[in-house]
Image (cartoon, rainbow over the protein chains, first blue to last red):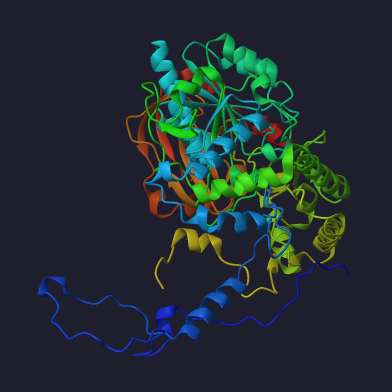
Length: 484
Length: 131
């Protein structure tokens, strides 16, 4: 039988810290007292916090055991579509931990010309990769990058003398787009993608008018398809005085290949944690830089990093700016990792990374096309979207197959997204997986599809090799228990 | 998940291609989601309802349904003003899964009677589902 790297192993139980330890146990030895004892000021006294009483070994084992319950890209294949879970080279961690960088104090920028140079050059790199004119590194995440751009759109239309109230968002755009637009006073107008999974310019033309600020487009879209009509679409939007926002979430497919300015994009954000290999998930810190064309540059957040005759400086004198989006200069340690990644790859290998990401995804698509129903059978890029249509007859769903993959030691792909594909299974292997590992994953998925026909119950019970079995997600959502 | 022939599609309501149903009750129309929609969504865990008095255009989003799989918008199959919302669903969203045609979501006073006649009959809706 085909199997993935997943085995059952010894998993150690671990209690909450407060349930461990013993009164008086400590991981710290006080040095001998060498000053006279004195009473504390009464105003400083109060009830002591409830810290657990633990020895050093208790704490180390606690976190080591918790980490063993975890699964990450350093553990194995993590083909979570639309999230670009690619491996982060460890050299980037080493660079970010360099004492001169890790200890640089943000309140003393004039003492850190090297840090300003890193940030300035990173802006230039990102402009070169996307084809855009100017960059702000401030936004702390992709969604804040979207918000930054939408605030700039609103500021642009205010300056033009007429605020616009609507914005067009296709059903294959990223999920946070409508929220970012709504926060800036734009009413999201959903557009349906065509039968081939991409947007028809006629659909845009029918909704675009003088009241509409523009369009938010993800390209490649969340089906992994390139919006081939991008130029026609951006011409329609610009023709009605609108602006085009490009969600760069899927940039990993097209680094150094697509010039977004020539496509007609006016502003876009990048997810450094997806494309430029910085830490991913866990709530941050993240980075979602925004790249814009010349006419939107005056609205970028301040302070801007500028090059002077003496070196680098920070400028805040920009009356049209939307202001600050983040304290200091953004999440600098994350930005340093992206800088290291770009420098270590160079233009040639960034482009190659995108080509291999697409090649890997297309390879998985072609190998699985007889096993799973392909949602849109046309050329696709860095991810492919399947569905569970062929498994319906056996009463096996996308969820069952995803859970069974866990038994084999794989993180499941993205499931039930994008919403335009019922029962979606969205696989994005990224460029960092080798052919042997992809072949094993493909063989496992084929085995799971065979099991669906012969032993569906096994899939409906999965996962069975994990520390906990299938969780009752419905009960967890309806009656959440948020304390221990 | 249900096969198309396992779906409950009563003939006393009219459907939209966005999978909502509408049932005329005197001056007003009750609106909910079809058996197909609840089956596709899976276990519903949260429903966001509009305020009574809100006016919606046909096709406009009037609320959201959150299931363990996804968050999905619900669209008004008719234009009109919300005269009531089913507050039972706030604490028991699973009612929509259990009996989608008894557990309506909003009640509208339609602003254009003709729109009701443009909705899909059971057979037309079935044809939409069969694609």
